[in-house]
Length: 412
Ligand code: 7TS
Image (cartoon, rainbow, N blue to C red; front, side):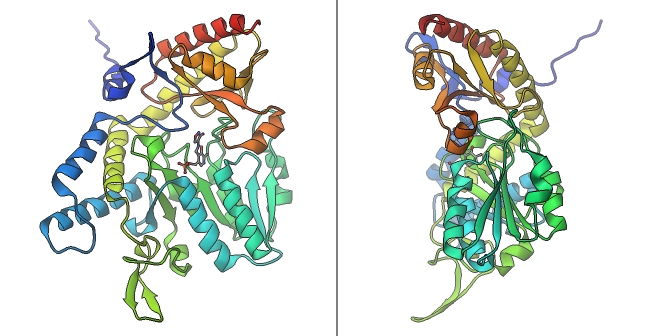
């Protein structure tokens, strides 16, 4: 007799997320807004409470038991983040508020240090606003110019243009790993290899990749990589920026204040080496510590398992969405990240998203902070369903029922 047990008990894993077990009005909650923020497992919630109940103190400055505990846990989380990203050392990890802050930090200090008139900042047309606006500021301040890799009609980067765009004037190439509005997974290692061959610094926006797939910054070969904790089971307000050590060492500080100095007089100061140089003031200690807990949790589930689960679910969603009359899906047809963005003929995406909410289905409607992508798609906004490893095929089936109902409601 053969007895094949499922390798992973996804329904048990789902039960780790208390928030999912609730009704919205008369309907069970279906949470498909994971690209905006993920839900938190009990382990993370408990670790946050435990920290404040037992260990809370400021880090790096006390000589008492609680401060030592908080410091050990905070620096322990940095080690976990370094291992999670495949960094060579925990000194390459700077705690930030999230991806947006990581990009701003680099655009401001790297930009001020290295950019000059005539230089080019290479981005893509599929960037989130947080990987556009900080570089616009950097260009304005330095006199550098902006260049963008176009998007093809099927929502991929037009890599035929790369040779023309990746020229020696380019000083930094910053691009999104997984697009939050198209679902495109960009070939990060290949792009970094091309840039590195010309001595160009690279920045990978990992907001949508860090919690969804195995990521190794040294395999990717990037100089910087930013993530947001809240999109990978940790709380809001904490994130991490990886920076290659030799590069971080060349950079001046960002914010001034406590914790980042060696010596201060009334008129000047000297600064600690990275990462402390970039972490002025009291950090989000609890957030960093439980980012470590979230990392432990994701590693226990397994990032390759999460990637495969998300892939299966997304493929299924794409297949079933095609059954809904009048539904137009954007982005690549296959090999995409865990999301599907669509519009329904006759329904404004906000109305469709609001309709879904009346059935307990949490979608996101809007431009998803990617207005240039919307312009390219010739729409003002889309509705987006984004998945994570606790979502199920049954929830997708229910979404399809709701969308079929919406099609009738909006006169399709
Ligand atoms: N980059 C990408 C690709 C993102 O998807 C987001 C957030 C960010 C950067 C910014 O992350 P933050 O944590 O610093 O805000 N994306 C979304 C979204 O798709 N819906 O809400 C936030």
